[in-house]
Length: 185
Image 1 (tube, rainbow, N blue to C red):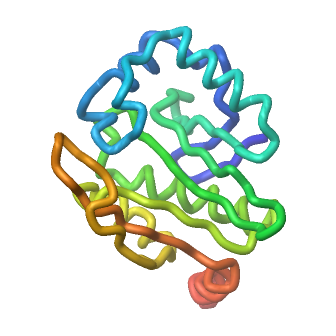
Image 2 (image 1 turned 90 degrees about the vertical axis):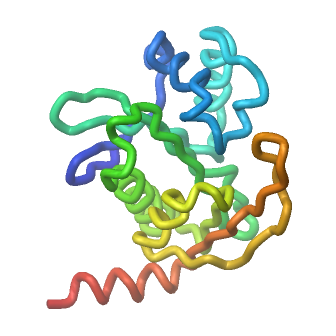
């Protein structure tokens, strides 16, 4: 499966993606500062085990973000776990290649997965969370029509201090309204 965007495409993360580059991302404190993975050192084996486990799951599509021009793998985005009873799922992502930070790649990836979740998978709602200090992530979701739905005060610890977690979400019906608005001349 491949989700095609203007500058990137998404494809399933493969074991062959696990190498020095991926390992560098997962052990870079700047890349992982807002990720739970930061609490334990990562190895090629631990990353490979994670990728293998994700590939075996039907309810958590795990995509590599790749540049259209070069095919370079620059980050990952995960949908799920999918709750089939409520038709909901979480969305999370990381851009490991720092030169691509702040260039709209996260928004493009979020938009691609949001469209896939609603138009292909028939989901009803998506949700995400980010640390309050990661305002760029919150804005990337908002550019895709997501709404700030709440704030969990002091929910997480970041560098030993309490930090709030911003809760974001999008309903399928709101996605449809926004899609009609942007496609109408």
